[in-house]
Length: 153
Image 1: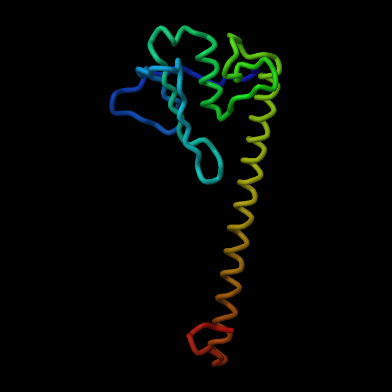
Image 2: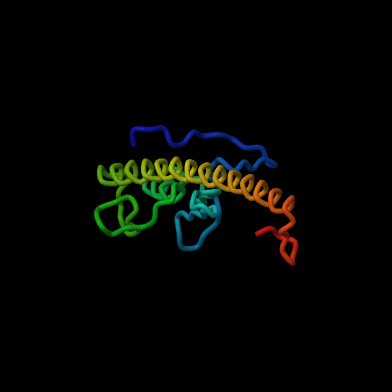
């Protein structure tokens, strides 16, 4: 996809960092793979777990690519001959898959940058308003115009 997305790592039994995709085997009756993704409140992926039916399934290019795309947050499609077509047999990402994924990942990155700047601007605005309100309340208090419930107005 023109970028490095995955880097294999081995975890110790008691390690479970948030910034990785855990891949493991799980005995499943009907599926070759299953991906569980947890989304954070702002809409980012917080945790991803990919389960494959067996260690031999780890050598099935279609299943691995399909499940790793789920781990990146992509769902099923029937719009084209895609690795994300649940009934498909593609063993690799198609050119359309790559274009769509690159576009979506860049869009997410842009949204993350915008969200960060919006959050910083809101935090700055709240802090400024809080200081202005405190100054206004201090001035009102000095004049003696405190309301019934102890708030300034």
